Image (cartoon, rainbow, N blue to C red; front, side, top):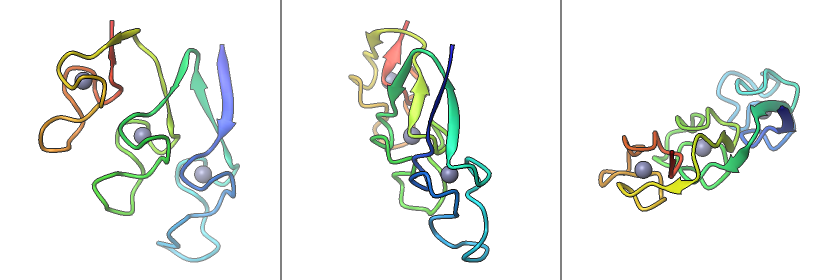
Length: 104
Ligand SMILES: [Zn+2]
Ligand SMILES: [Zn+2]
Ligand SMILES: [Zn+2]
């Protein structure tokens, strides 16, 4: 089952939220549609807290969810390596759960 959800990176506007190329350029995550697809079951991306933005500060989409703000949940166990935060010690995505906070 595929869910259609609002693109978190552009908040559904379909426009590049940072005007990186030009004010009329399309959002690179949803290619301008304002919607993205994530396979069920869907969880909020803990790495970017659902914003779709890279928490490391650069104006690029979150590297874990690809800017969607949501992830496909691979497992339902809290990752013991990052304790469910999705981050490793240096704030890069946790290698145990690939930044999703969940493992099988
Ligand atoms: Zn978008
Ligand atoms: Zn994310
Ligand atoms: Zn983890």
